[in-house]
Image 1 (cartoon, rainbow, N blue to C red):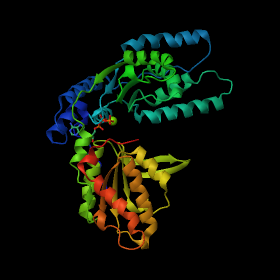
Image 2: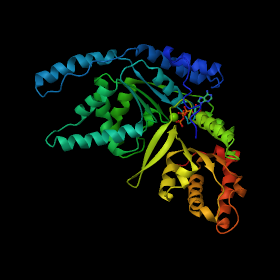
Image 3: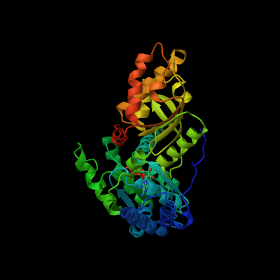
Image 4: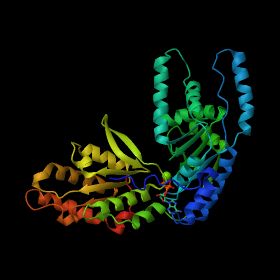
Length: 390
Ligand SMILES: Nc1ncnc2c1ncn2[C@@H]1O[C@H](COP(=O)(O)OP(=O)(O)OP(=O)(O)O)[C@@H](O)[C@H]1O
Ligand SMILES: [Mg+2]
């Protein structure tokens, strides 16, 4: 696969997210959307406030009461004056991540970090355990952990903020309080308004102060757009390209670039039953593979299932003709398609033939019939509009 199109950076970043957003409207990359424009304006405000933002690092931690007193006081005063972060919330496909990524790319903040919220929490728990191992007599891992996070990022952008796990809920309040005290500004995208975070879960009462804190430190901005751009993009995608030649490769490059928007694609690693599964290129819930890497190596149902739950779309290059001669590949491909289909993952592929011509006659042809029929269905408008099942 080639990397053409994949580094098409949004224009005009030096002036902030709003001019960049406008430039993308002007060159037709984005459709105009009043809710998005409003959000882009709010992000622009924050961008301006944060130019050169570089809160001083905390003094070294110490246990003396006086030092604690001295350490807390000026920081608390400064806390109020700090710019509020933003909590972008809305239905799926409204452009929240796209806008946040523009903001993040433009932000003129030396220490900044954009991370999927789920990943952030995994890292936080790992940090806790490490600290406890190294400090068996220590009583509170939150301050050192917050120091480490704040040293790395004065601006933290979280994609897909959500709380499902009691272990996360238990530490979030104190961790975020400590981060805010250290001057960290948070921007987040989410499908859930703060008041509904962790709703209906045991232990919710203890979680309420965290919600209050989020509402105090972040402005909540509801992206009320009516269009699901992701679905719209999928609907206009052509999903099966025959033959798998250079032209098809370019079409797949374009489909991939279109699906991931501005996000930079990179290698991702999934952990499947303790093993690492490498995804050569991925961003925004979309993975790209060559057929040979995905079905020509000894992967199994567990790997395909992990891909199908983790990614909402797969761009798959160069599916060859299948036959009894390459039955291992064919068998894996059948398993892969079953997993994708069950989870309503959208597939864009280039192949040597149309699905019903893909498997040459002979042993195994019968087993492939179901796969061919699924592949046909996966190209239909109805299928492309189904939500991904995770
Ligand atoms: N105004 C627009 N015109 C055209 N495409 C757009 C527009 N806004 C967003 N998109 C595209 O629609 C897709 C979905 O956008 P995005 O991923 O930002 O949605 P989201 O709100 O973060 O969704 P989710 O809640 O599922 O994470 C992306 O490919 C994005 O580039
Ligand atoms: Mg998103």
